[in-house]
Image (cartoon, rainbow, N blue to C red):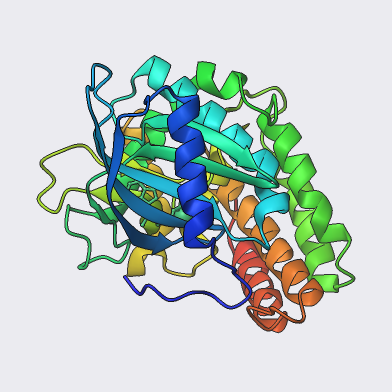
Length: 327
Ligand SMILES: Nc1ncnc2c1ncn2[C@@H]1O[C@H](COP(=O)(O)OP(=O)(O)O)[C@@H](O)[C@H]1O
Ligand SMILES: [Mg+2]
């Protein structure tokens, strides 16, 4: 992993990290016999930086000693993601109550320092899943993702306690709105296509992880222990087809194979996932292109891509969809 600060992402100072650790130790009752043995930069996420902390607590009746992770938002992101991080803390606490079969970070505690929601959790072993076929260490990547998505989507009770949407159609209607606002005929046509391909009225939503990228799925290199899902910042009650679109990202050949969408959907359904149609994944892919276009237009200073790129991708996808017949 490349440990390089990202421009416009201001890291917390050492003092700030020490202060956060002290606050967490106090809040969660570690007592005064806590010794921080080692703090080491672990990785840069999209919104925050992670440090590994080796902690020794003596005496330790609550088994709090061990390898932990402190997640500290970049200064520029802190305010914007405050709500989402509170929701993540809630999701992690709820997961601990239901004991899912995949691994996830056990939340030890969290504190708010100014705008920053700082999380403190157990370190999770594993390496990020490479979603490209041939590079994936543990079998077919679409099977790993399909299976783990199905297990997350089993957890309907957890979803109901989070913010989000009651029905799948409700989310689709919400997400397609952006397409109308972009002032591009391609996105207007995408909107019209989506209106014709909405999920069935009344079909219920479930818990979504919301960011099933390879970086957030940690696997044991020999597949000996269950995969882990980290980074629950986008956890929401929502449409499972949206989860799938986050995986496929509108790529022409997800996982670097032909029929990647179909393979993912098949693996997900075989693993007992919810009933999703292929066109529902494409609907959310069009929305993702719309949001990328909007972000690229609005964010001229930190521009991550040329807005013409998502526009071109949306156009190509629409062309392909025009040739496909659904239902
Ligand atoms: N509990 C954990 N165990 C091991 N590594 C972690 C843990 N939490 C985060 N990381 C590492 O830190 C990186 C950033 O954390 P993440 O929660 O994904 O931040 P962001 O929300 O900004 O994407 C991850 O990609 C991973 O490498
Ligand atoms: Mg992440």
